[in-house]
Length: 125
Image (cartoon, rainbow, N blue to C red):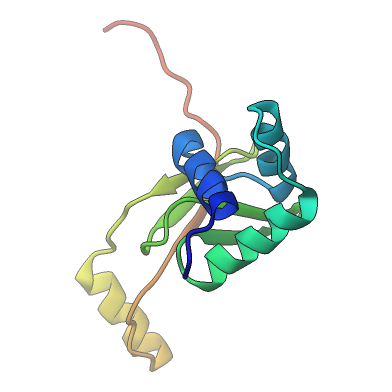
């Protein structure tokens, strides 16, 4: 894949933001930063980067979100703010074996989609 100027702009933004963004967010942030790019170019470059496995694409009810990571990882979504955080978690081997026995599938990879609210923190001990 050729890393043309517009793809580099999109990648640089995703890396610098370190979060999951919609195509509209990306378009607006790039243009706010003085990077002239059109809606169509944003969508085309996101599609190319995602198809090449360079970035991730999360399909949500509210639309697609794009992230800078392309390695296997999980996500936790805040039920109040909708913010999605990347999460590196490894399930215990015994749990994976139990799932394999129950389903008859050999698990080769997995991602978890978790949802929750930030726990209240209490002051001092």
